[in-house]
Length: 426
Image (cartoon, rainbow, N blue to C red; front, side, top):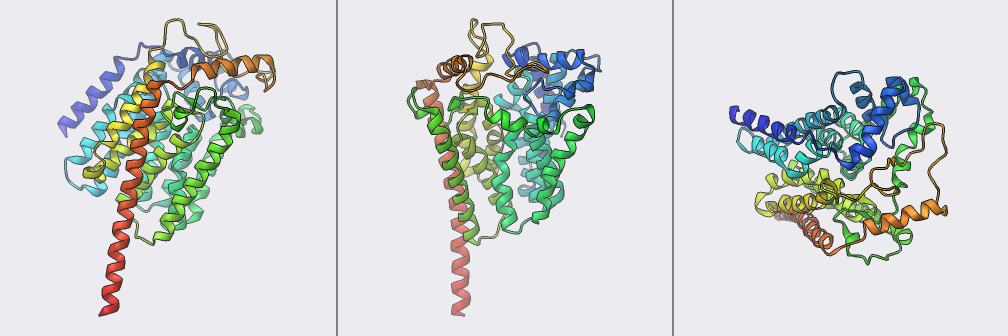
């Protein structure tokens, strides 16, 4: 354990070495949120609409304004802390299958040292480790057959990021398979609503709090926001307004079909099968859904590692494919061109995508400013050969996880059928 602790310290030090880096997201979004909270009464500022993140993350930023910590370091410290939580639940999940061996700490350390995980918190200062850590905690408690803690953790995950829904197909299957009672699902919206209470007490309108994710979903028009997804294979001039609803519908049909396949298989669920279903959902949904960011494969990156430890002979290469595709998609954002800036404004100009408190809403469709912004984003996120290669790598990972999951269910189904035949003959 001493070596594991030393490796964890090194992982943290690697992140600290990147703390001085200021990403575009920090400069143009998170720092402006921190400044607004700091100059508008701390927690009292939460009554205003000044950010497009849900309020639990804004609570953490508000807390930082009361502490003698530089905002850049504070934002990253929060994310790094949840990196450790993410590694902890990776350890616990792998330990359910490999008891008392060196594999669980190895899996946790691999997750800690994943380039995307390390740079997401240490360099980028993003909050993906927060929702992913809670989501992975939910998976762990599902595997332990503890439905109410699982619902609590999934609720915490959803409260921080909408991308928690990438694990919801797993929840649906386990409820329908009676692995967990449906009543435990009430904990998910219950936690989300409970975490809205402090903002409500600060004076935030309820409608504003409940519409955060709906506003996020309608903020972008591009089919892919640097995500190595299926939309990279479309031509640059593809009609996004037409394709987006089709993509959502197709994704829904595929997920429903896979869920029905699991339900009709009548195969007994195991730790490996549940992990495979979680990994399948986490990699398939951002690959098929339109308007995904490059960061939205974060859960898939972690679950691909865990799945590889469940079926190493079949899936050892999948975490490599997912990591290469995701991290290469990170690079244009982590190291942008010197003359680039956020869409909608010249280099260095603040653009938050949110109106000032009390101001008018952002330009709606049909407005000249809105059309210019849409054109700029279409050019910025137009498919390129490089991103098509990354999408091809991700497609191989998707197919590999799907095929491994299918084989795992089919193997047990055949074994069950053979056993029933033997019983009938006897």
